[in-house]
Amino acid sequence: MCTDWEHAMVGEIGQVQLGRQRSPATDSGSYMVPYLRVANVYDGFIDYSNTYSMNFSPAEQERYFLERGDILLNEGQSLELVGRSAIFTGPSRTYCFQNTLVRFRAGHRTLSGFARAIFKRWLDIGHFTTIAKQTTSVAHLGANRFACLRFPLAPLPEQQKIAEVLDTVDEAIRKTEAILAKLKQVKQGLLHDLLTRGIDDNGELRDPERHPEQFKDSPLGRIPKGWRRGRLGDEAEVFNGTTPSRALDCYWGGTVPWLSSGKVNDYRIVTPSEHITDLALSETSLRVVPRGSVVVGLIGQGKTRGMTARTEIDTTINQNLCAIIPHPEVSGVYLHLFLHYHYQKLRGGGRGSNQDALNCGLVREFPIVVPPLEEQESIADAIESFEARYEHEEEVISKLKELKSGLMEDLLTGRVRVTPLLEGAPR
Image (cartoon, rainbow, N blue to C red; front, side):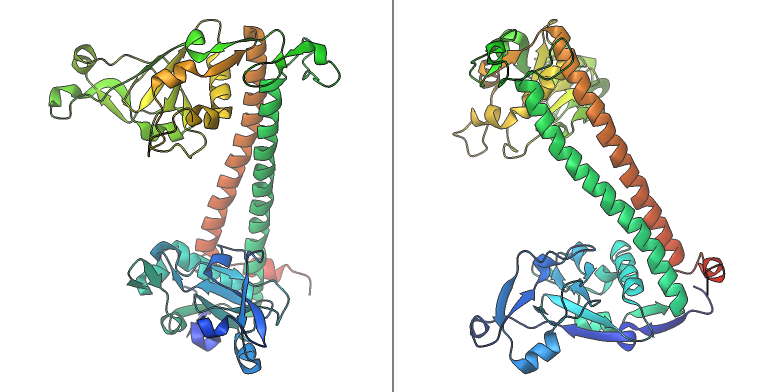
């Protein structure tokens, strides 16, 4: 830590206040005021859309009102989220706060942006977990314990510059997250259009309104006339795997990839769960699923969209997975896109079990529509090009978060100074 930085307790450089406890008596009264609770405060932002109201007398309002620039921290949360914080940006003296939150109001020696950055770093390095007290399933920060934490006080101009640097990175992260959210929305619409309208000889989406004569009915809705329809089992080989006996050491630790159902949360599978031996492969009903095939989870996570994946390795699978090996005239990429998009309908065929279970028989019978192979490949290319852009933005946001983490470690400990920036600033 820099020798010219001071230290003081949190309670000495700002006001620490625990929120108001809710009770049946506060649910009605003459002074109903909206209040924020732990469910409203996320890491770096506050959700004002879901608030409740309770009765705060005029004296209580003076104590619990929020001012712009106040920092709210989660007081009661799961252990890893205790101390999660955000700066209040709503209208001053409009909201109060509940006792699941702690308010920090910066004094004259501290800037809110700098204090929030310190609190964020403390959350990331687990500093809050060291002082939190666990009661049943909830951990508590403790207003008094928080107020006694040792706070690094940089000079105010340096606090301002550090906050500005970190805010710049935060803004870049927010913008990239917004791009990712928009791309995710657009992808769903694009996938719907490609899988119901297809791509014509000119590389354009077909238009069912302008050219209804180009479409026909199918069990999955209107589709282009050139597409064939049938059962999944007519277009691919479908089977499930098994788990070799764990009691036989000679079956495990070999070179043959083996896949468990947990891996099917991944969109593409490039790494197996474990490896089995050639002996296990020869002495059990296991078969190798070639790369480019599709696997579908049969049990357990039926409410989760995306329980399908394409294999990019040759692998064997366990009994809770269904392998789908496309016939030569079916693209594995198209097949995966189709099943990923229709996954909820596919899963709906397995209702009746408390695990929402599927089986390979139901998968074989699932209706499918298949364009000519060349069009399948065009559809796959369009989606993969879109995914490449999405993955690029994910890489950008990952690098930005890594940059921010490094900046916080350097700037908030004084390891790297912003003094040169301050010296070069206009006066």
